[in-house]
Length: 247
Image (cartoon, rainbow, N blue to C red):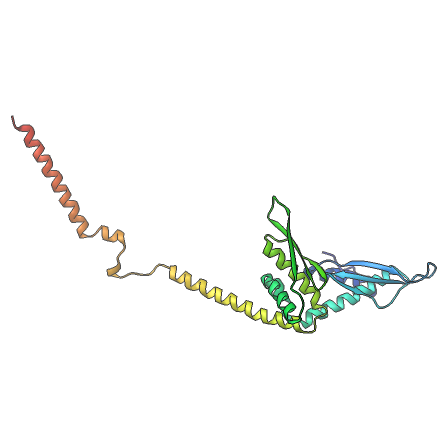
């Protein structure tokens, strides 16, 4: 993880802070691009940075590339922090990624857009690792690799949601809030079911009328059967001895 550089002026710390924040939040690391809009003898640089498939562009131009990059890093960091601060349910797409596809599908339905189209492949046939990308509203979003096709598609949907949150009018946040409640409810139900199943599988104390089979096998009837068997064996031995003595 990148460490803050002490002793530098404030205006030179924005790139480092953006890098640190992206790493801590699990976002894709920033990628910078700079263009020149001035003359060769008097260049004017404008920078843009792409973080988690969202591009931020500085409003001003600067005589040096590094200054432009620091400025756009400041803009990106402020915007990302504000987005996370205003969306307390944003973490649900990380805590329960299985909700991401349904969130994106419902968002498409409510905003009268076509459903996202997923394309999932297995790059290495020898290992169960899958990569998925989706096309939604003319944009392509690629997620991290997953251990199954379903997981890879959920991760791709999460990337799309992260990008759409930057320009969300409130519809997407409302869907995330509702999923946050329903997904939490399902978890509670599942836990109660598991607890009830565990209780039904626990050993139950039985009374005298429900004795274990092993205890029954050692009861009086079993002892009587053994005695009868021994008597028969003794009588058979006596009969054989008497036959052997006869001339």
